[in-house]
Image (cartoon, rainbow, N blue to C red; front, side):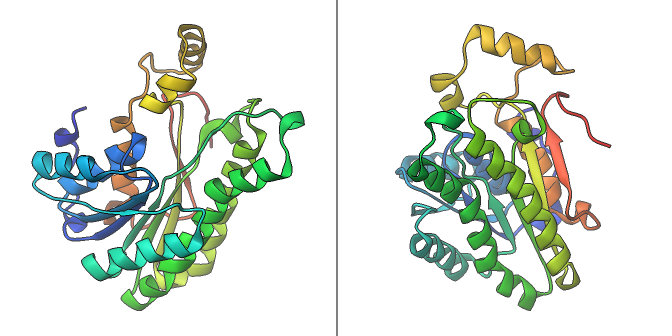
Length: 258
C-alpha cells in the first residue's frame, strides 16, 4: 500500500507527535505517515536528517522538526522532547521507535555491551515516557506507542540482550497502561516481524535467511517499512480509544496470540 493510500484518522490532524529514530528505517515511514495525517511531527536521532526533512516537506507539504540527539543521553533526549513541545505544543503522541538489534551471542556479551544495548532498547523508552506523561495528564490524555519485536516471542538466538529488552518493553507497556489509565493515557506496544529496512538489507538479509523467514510467515510477501505505519496510526488515533496495555503484532503471520 502506498503511503498516500492509508486511511485518514481525523483526530491526528494537528496532533503533537514525537518519534525517536524518526528519520530512517521504520521511523522514517512513521514520520511520513503522521505528516500525511496533518500531524505536527518532531523526531530525534543521532545521524543528520535535514535532507530527509526537505524531502518530507516536498512530498507532504508538512515539514517535520528534527533535533539531533542520542537517546541514551537522557539530557539530550529530554532536550529534544522539550524542543518538540515548545514548537508544536505538549506532546500528545509519543512513539518510542528507535532500537538497535546488534547481534552478539550470550558468551560474547560483556557488561559494557549489555548496558549499551539496554540503554537504547529499554531505558530510553522508560525515560521518554516519564518525560511526556505529566503534560498528558494535564491535557486529560495521550498516547504512547512502544515499538517491540516478535523476537521475544520466538525461540531465536544470537541477540539475547535485544530480545530481553523487547520482552521488557511489553512489561513496561502493561504497567504504564495500568498506572496511567485513569488519566486516559493509553500505552500499547507494536511488534513488527522482520521488516526489510535498508539497515537490515545491508547487515542481515541473505537469500537463504529471507527464504527461511518467509516460510514462517502466513503471507508470502516480505515486510516493508510502510507495512507498519497503518497499525501505528491506528494505535495513536481515537479509533483505538478503548485499547491499552496490548501488543499489536504486524509480522505477516509468524507468531500467534490469543
